[in-house]
Amino acid sequence: MSGNQEWISRGENVFIGTYSRFAAAMVRGEGCRLWDADGKEYLDFLAGIAVCSLGHCHPAVTEAVCRQAGELMHVSNLFHTIPQVELAELLTENCFADRVFMANSGAEANEAAIKLARIHSDPGRYEVITLSGSFHGRTLATVAATGQPKFHQGFEPLPEGFVHAAFGDPKDLEAMISEKTCAILCEPLQGESGVRPLEPEYLRSIRELCDRHGLLLIFDEVQTGMGRTGTLFAYEQLGVTPDIMTVAKALGNGLPIGAMLTTERVAASFTVGTHASTFGGNPVAAAAAVAVLRTMLADGFLAGVRERSHYFVGRLEELVERFPGLVNGVRGRGMLLALVLTDRGRELGAEIVGRLFAGGTLINFAGGRVLRFIPPLTVSSAEIDLLIERLAGVLAELEGE
Ligand SMILES: *Cc1c(COP(=O)(O)O)cnc(C)c1O
Image (cartoon, rainbow, N blue to C red):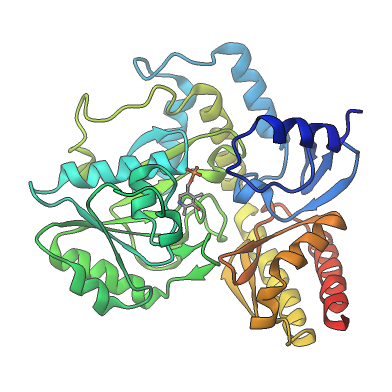
């Protein structure tokens, strides 16, 4: 016995129960496909939670990782390494930022951003305002920053210095600004809580509030960054530039790496000894990220993502027309898309995801209100058609029951 059942039961015996996993032990991936230990094939519209954006085992990334693993795996940040320098150059050449701090995850990149915002600001200014429905990570500070009470329960007292403003309401945000405030932190498009875009006008008013009150604007682009919304970073489409930006998820296409990016002026507040990470920007992870960036920046890559996104949105809209009792809208940008469920649809959200899984298709139910689609950015229109066909099948089944 070496199939799913064995690995699942052995896993259930030893893991702490923080996750509710799909009943599959994945053993191999290629492009938008995964295979489990029983040899069953899946069409993957989850991409490891918006991480494997070039698809599973993209040859350029695999080659870079293998090459670097044979050369140098780790020396710590007591030294410079070639992949880390190349990565920092590529990142800063392609966004507003001049300087980079390397981390290992989204939460860590956000921790660095929060620490930088505090140390950069006048004494007594330490409070960060975030938005309700936001998601910024699971460490104590980033969970405190996260504007969803369900993630706080049982972990109190949370670190001080975070307040949450109502989503979409610039007046509420302004009312929360005090002599203690140092920054406003938000996702340009909330991913985890159900693919909720912040309107460009709202984002502009946030930028304006920051300028007027001398606050730093931090964009958490951990999910929206690295091409996910059709441009390398989501802020490029919004006419609003932050002072600090965090990225992670797709940066290494599966290798754990994150980065906190900022301007020369703000970066100057982080001096020797103020912040550090043993593994941050590890050469193997950085080599993967360099391969990711070079691939995404190649001619036509991001334009292709936008084109197929447009096609995908059109096909999702057909489902809204066909199944109005279950789904009533499409939202998101690029390849961070969602079908909004009706009240009846919400009750069936987990069931829809479960039936698709049984049929070999992976999506997820986000924020208790939408079906979220975050495939590899390389997904083909034929794969989009296959997803739509299978999803339509499940929706038709449920509507008939
Ligand atoms: C996933 C996510 C994080 C947390 O990243 P980890 O790598 O899991 O720590 C933070 N912010 C946003 C917007 C995310 O989507």
